[in-house]
Image (tube, rainbow, N blue to C red; front, top):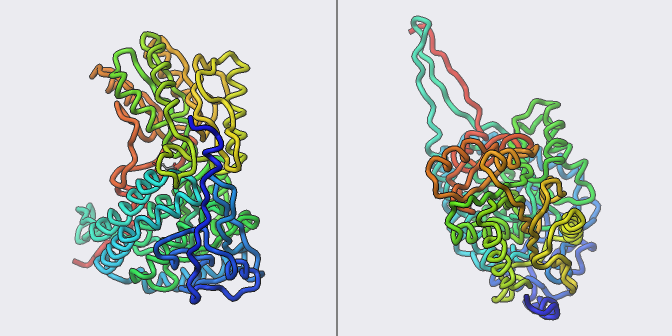
Length: 522
Ligand code: SIN
C-alpha cells in the first residue's frame, strides 16, 4: 500500500477553459463562467452542465443545481440542474411526441444512427473514460474498460435492431393465417446507478432506441456528466430531438422517480440499483401495469473447491471481488473456500491484495480507486467491525485510509462466520471475507441462503461437480472457473430479489410488444 499522503498529493485542477459558446447564462451557473474547468478533456464541449429535454440543453426551472464531486479528492467537479416534477413531465411529453416519428423509422435507419453513435464514442474514448474516472473514481484503465463495455452495447443493439423478427404461426382455425410482429413499446423511463456511469445507460438506452422507443433518463446525481456526454454524442450521431431526454435530480428524486413510474404515457421502466429501490419502483409501476426491467442487488457467492486450479481461482477472485473497488452488483461478496486449500488460498490472496496501489484513478500507478462517498466507507467499516466482533481474523486492511477522498484499505478477513453481516448483505466495497466449508452440500446450502440471486461463481476441475454446482446455484448468472462474466451478448439479470428481466443479449425484446395479427377470410 502506498503511504496515505500519496493519496492526497495528486492535483486534479486543470486549466482548460470552457469555450465561450458553452458558457451558460443562468445566474445560478455563473460559477462556471469564472472558474477553471477541472475536467481537462481534449474536447471540453463534451462536458455538459445542463439537462436535456426535447433536443435542448436546459437548466432547472427554479435554477437549483446539484454539486458533483470527485470521490478521489472531494473537490467539486461542477454542477448540473436539480430538476423536479415539472421538468419530468416536460421530458415525458417530449418523448411521447418523438415516439410518433421515431417508432416509424426503419430498423436499418436506427441501426445506422446507433453505429454512428458507437463510432463517436470510440473516437472520444479518452475523454469519456476520463469523465468516468473523475466522477466515479475508478482507475483510468478500468474506466477505459467500462467505456469499451458501454460502447459495445450500442454496437450490439444496432445489430439487434435489424433482427427483431416476427413469425408465422400455423392456425388451428381454418382460413386464418397468424402473423406475429414486434413493435416498440413506447416511452421508456431509465434510472441508472453511479457504479457504471456509462455502461448502465447504454445497456438500456441502446436497446430502447434500437427497438424504436424513446426515453427519459434519470442518471445518478453522483455521476451525471458521463450520461450527458453520451447524449451529446448521440445527438451528433443524428438521434432526433425528444428521442432521448435527461432529467438530473437529487433532492427531488422521490417525485421524479414516481412520475417516471406512474405517468400513463410511460410504458416501461428500466432500473439498475438496490433491491429496496427496485421494490419501490415496481410498486409504483404496478399502478398502470407497466413492463419493468429491474436489475437489483446481489450478494454473490464465490466458491473455491479443494480440486480447483488455485492460480485461476486467485485471479478470478481478484477481478470479481475488487472490480470497481468492490462496487459492482456482480462482485463476489461471500467467499467460501474448502478446508483443504483454505490456508493457501487465504495467504496468497492477502499477498496479492497487499500489492494493490490505492489512489486517484488518474495516477497511472493506481490499481484501485476510492469508494463513491463516505456512506459507502462507513458501510464497509461496519461489515469489517461486525465480522471481527464475531471472531473473524483481520489479514489485511480493515480501515478507512486518511485523506480527503473516500478511500478504504483493501481488506481480507479470514474465518468469517456464516452469520456475519458481510455474509448476509452486499458490502459494495473492497472487503474479501473468507469462510471455510467442508462439503459440496454444505456450501450449496450456504450459497443459496440469501434472498437475492444475481451472480454466483465457483472454481473446480471436476466435470461432474461443475454441472451439479452450476445447476444448483440459485442465481441468474454463473461463472464457472471464471470471475468475469459481463459482456454485451449475455442475458444479464438475476432471480429472487435480484430483479426481473434480462439486459444485453436478446434484451431488445424487453422494449418491444408482441402482437398477433390473425388474417381471416382467406
Ligand atoms: C452492475 O453492477 O450493476 C453491473 C455490473 C456489470 O454489468 O458487470
